[in-house]
Image (cartoon, rainbow over all chains, first blue to last red; front, side, top):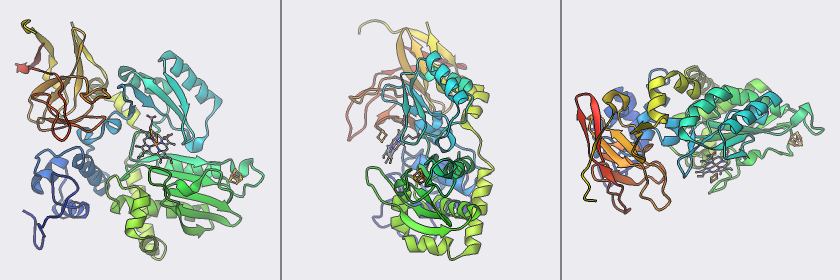
Length: 338
Length: 106
Ligand code: HEM
Ligand code: SF4
Ligand code: FES
C-alpha cells in the first residue's frame, strides 16, 4: 500500500492504529493530496478503520497545517475542549475564558464579566496564571449564552493554540522599562490568536531584563533591552520544566514580529502533534533552528508569509458556534423527554 | 429489574451529528446518545465508569467505540463495556431508528 523503500519492521507509529511516523504521514498527505482524516486512515491502511483518540486529532491538525485555506476542520476529531471551545471540568461543567490581550482589561469589560458571572451563577472567578479571568463551573447549556452576553473573543484556554501573552508593566509606567511590553504583548496576541499549533503555545513580553513576566518558561519569551529585544524559545514551566534558550537579539519591532512568525510557523510545520516547543527544540537542535531562521533570510520570510496566510483564515469560534444553530443545539442542549 | 422496558421517541435522526454525542434526558435518566459514521445509534447512561465519574457524551467516537472525554478510556458502545487494560461498565440502552425517528428503550 505504501510506496517504495518503506520499512515495515517492528517500528512504532504515532498510535496503535498505524506503524507510520508523523513525518511519514505528513509526507503521504502532501504526496497523495489526502484531504480528510477518513481518507488518510483509509489510504494509509489504518488498523482501526476510524482511528483513535490519539491519531484522529493529530491527523486533523496536520491537514489544517498543510491546507490552511481548504481543510474543513473536523469537530468529531477534536478533543472535547476544542470541540466545545470551552474547558470541561471533572463534574461535566465548563470553564469560559475570554481574551484579555496582553493581560490588560478595562473597567467596562470587568463589569460585563461580573454581570454575566452573577447571572449564570459562575462557581468561581479565578485569576489565571496567564493574566486573565477564568469563569469556572458553567452549566453546559449556559455556555453559549455566556459567550453571547460577554460578547468578547474566545481566549482559547481550551486549545492547542496561542494561550496568553503574559506581559509586565513596561516602559508605559515602570521606571526600569526600556520597551513597551504591554503594547507589544497585546499586538502579538492579536496577531497570532486562533491559529492551531501542535500543542498549546505561551508567550511573554518584558520591558527590561528584570523579566517580571517570566520569559524563561515560555514557548517564546521576549525581553526588552536598551537597543531592542532579545528572543528566547523552548521554555516550559510544567511537569518537565525547561529554561528557554536565547535565540537572537533584534533591534526593531518589525524584526521581532518576523522572528516570532518564522519560529511559530517552523514549529507548526515540523512539530509532532502534542509536542511542546521545549521538546521540539531538544529534538531539532537549537542550532538547526537557528540555521533555518536566522542564517537564511529567504526561508525566514517564506515561513512568515505562510503563517500570515494561515492567519487570514481563522475566525472566532464562539461567534461561529452562535451562528450555527444546528451545531449549537447538538453540542450544548440536552433533549429532555417526558 | 423485571419491569418491562418502555420506548421513548428521542427526536429525529438529523438532530444527531455523526460521531458526536448528544445528551438526552428520559424520565430523569441522563443518556449519552451516539450516531456512528455508519448511522448506527447507541445510548449509554451519561455517567463515566471511571471512579472519578463525569460525563461520556463529549468523547471521541470510532466505529462502535467511544474514547471517554476525561480519562480516555475505550468503551464499547454496544455493551458499555470498558476495554482492557481498564475495567468497568457503563449502562447501555437499546436504540433503534423508526423511519426518521430515534427510539430509545428504557
Ligand atoms: C501537561 C500539563 C498541563 C496541563 C494538562 C494543563 C491543563 C490546563 C487546563 C485544563 C487549563 C484550563 C483550566 C480551566 O480553566 O479549566 C489550564 C490553564 C492554565 N495553565 Fe495549565 N496545564 C498544564 C501545564 C501548565 C504549565 C506548565 C503552566 C505554567 C507554566 C500552566 C499554566 C496555566 C495557566 C497560566 C493557565 C491559565 C491559562 C489561560 O489563562 O489561558 N499549565 N491548564
Ligand atoms: S521587566 Fe522591567 S520593565 Fe517590566 S515591570 Fe519588570 S522592571 Fe519593569
Ligand atoms: S490543572 Fe492547571 S496545571 Fe494542572
